[in-house]
Length: 285
Length: 274
Image 1 (cartoon, rainbow over the protein chains, first blue to last red):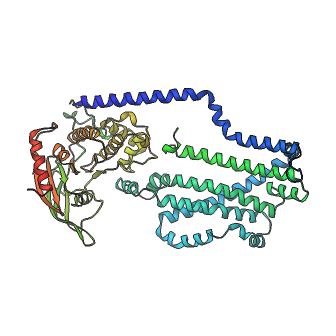
Image 2 (spheres, helix red, strand yellow):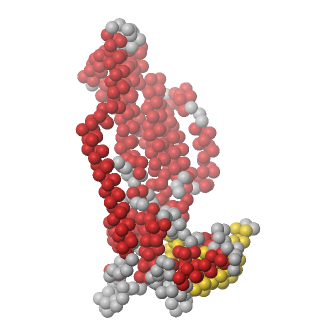
Image 3 (cartoon, rainbow over the protein chains, first blue to last red):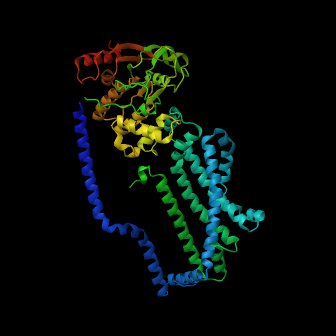
């Protein structure tokens, strides 16, 4: 009686080992070019910089409009060696993080509450959807009147910007947890906290990460704008200050630093995602 | 087929093992198979009377299969038996061996495995024990239950990495790990390919005989019903149209002429030719 199973099993094993061999030989072929995977995405930026430098060198691009990469590098060196740059990055980073934590937690908690509780949803969702449609940067005049140009204004704006994408995606994630899994959880005696911890939260997590990554983008955007309008430190202030003195190299440097910080935040979020969602076939290698 | 020495995974929790003589049989008995007593059970969804007065008695340890066309109410009946829905009218009783009313202690396996994708196979099985069993204990029991469905080596695998048949075996282990008195199977093999289905039927038959629980299988496959069950009922428009005992001993051979005869009878009844 078991013969059948045994045959089926050996067959399956043979197939899987053959497939395994095919995969491993493909890996071996690709192994020497592993660095290719890392370097290839940076090929295009490198070419752009090269074209840009050549254009500046032959006088094709006026340095009044756009400084050469070498000039930007020099500006970077100057700012970095004086310690001003590190200070500005630290200040901007702290603002960004504070906004993310405040806005992110509010959005996350509201998303959870409204995803789980019908009453909470009825009470707050419509209001949140209305507020969401207001471009939060349009509040800047009002925010300056309320908070002046201190840290509160920037924290308020960044938090507000981060709040909505995280709220929407958390809410959506919780609402879209597989009904069958919820029923299964209830059959097996899960309720309240254990149902949340074992079924609802992990089920909503992929969507929450989408919200986080989207929120990170908005976080930097808001911070740049609010720092260039009213600040006495930070990257935005550095750029705005440089504009007044026509220092295009510093302005471009500030832009590049924003790009690097944005990329860094995304890399961290992705790493977290890969770790937390290891069960998901999309993230399995 | 040789059944390996069966060690009940709950045996080691028992506190008074030392006082008891060693079990004679592999069937140690925490699974208290329940008897079922259905009296005029009705279920209505709006104006739709899905079940119209079902009367049914099921002995403990019996394997019942429910067959019928789609929409005949067979899945609804199963959901009532497992407490997922409540009957509109009538009474469903679960009786222990002395004939007293008892908790149903039912577990169900669905057509879809419904595994939590973020738990590995063993943690999915451990979820079947409910929240009261401490984690390391639960994990050990779960691994033992996976062994019963011949998946011990997949304990740490994510569900996404398992085949359809393997996922369904994990779901079966999850239902069995708590030693249910009633095992409810809602077309558990419906989504599997024909060959996997045959080996799953063998597995179901073996674990059912080892555990001695009462089992109710809903299926649209008449051959599967006569192969596995002691008794097959045909539902039509919410009523029991035919109640057919299958007296052949287990395990059964595919292609047994007696089973083929019964299969023909059931098909004729379902298709309205009898």
